[in-house]
Image (tube, rainbow, N blue to C red; front, side, top):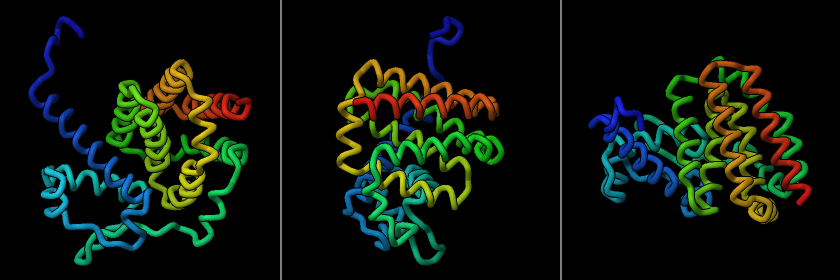
Length: 235
């Protein structure tokens, strides 16, 4: 830590604590949705009830719901409430059977091109959240934690485009990433050294996007995905 700034300010400490609470609650609700404990079309409890249930402030709950809405997990209707969003396509389930090779081919075709939309449409807050995700991934100590922040990083890239069609299309990627075969290959092919390398690549992507440098971001995303593909498919 710099000698000029030996202590975090009180406001920085509060923001960091609030961010951790948001991440923790979001992880819980996402897990409930992904595991089917909260089903498509199901109405969520009110902000007040969620705050009471999880021991969080309403501001934290409101921030979590805004993030889940942005990545397409829920939908909110004024006067009606908040609902788990149904899959964008009725044939999403068969897509979950796509092979890891097909998945990586699709991601290489799609994700580098997201840089244009992100640089054009992402807010500074979107990009700060992306870098925060990198920092949380750096701090991860268990496989499950790393995998959570790895998924979250790529979800945030998609959400930062603010393009509903792209967000909906990426649901197919999310479905395949939950496939047991994909998870097994990913886990077996990712050791601590590779984990660290992926994190460094995530940081380069985030830094290029924060600098609004489209071409560098494209190259960084493409290089990252090529490395992931080579490691996983060779394995």
